[in-house]
Image: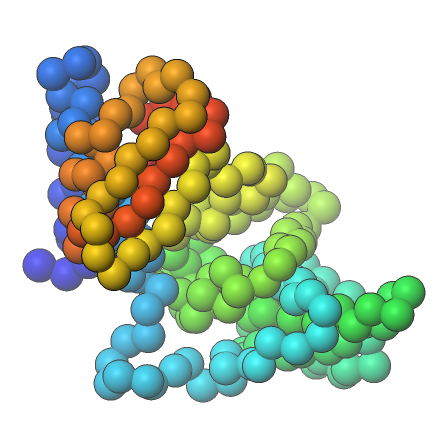
Length: 230
């Protein structure tokens, strides 16, 4: 069974599982598995070390910004306007087929701007070159979503869904939890706040799903299970 099939099966099981006190541990492990498989979608396919042609751009400057959007929404034009880099722009779709980097100099800082190929619906599942594009976006310090002004809300919702499917959450804070993996000592859990939907047993089950058996974990503010494992 491939990764996409595993993701589909887990999503179906989560959907048909009634949420209550008796099932919260089971749902927590399912969500941990789902997050793990979604991350694996972005790992290079084929031989070890093999990378997508034209996507291996070295990170440089003080920050990296990725332009992401559907084809022909103006990403290449914006890159060429803001930097000295010429990214080919045309009236037809899929003009940009690789990752094109440029540099913006602003108040003494060098900001690397990446023009990424347009993605299509289903990119997170491998359609087009979606996985390579999203994998590069994940390395950015800032993601700028570009949309067609006549289809703004629709494209925004679709792009958000594609990114969240592989763990990129735009404009959201990270879960309030301290985590540090260790070489020995087992799992050390120290809650510094009241917990409503998670406990030490749940944390251990989630970490074991990731083959982590030695770590320090400390929630720093109260949160729900859906926030910590989604």
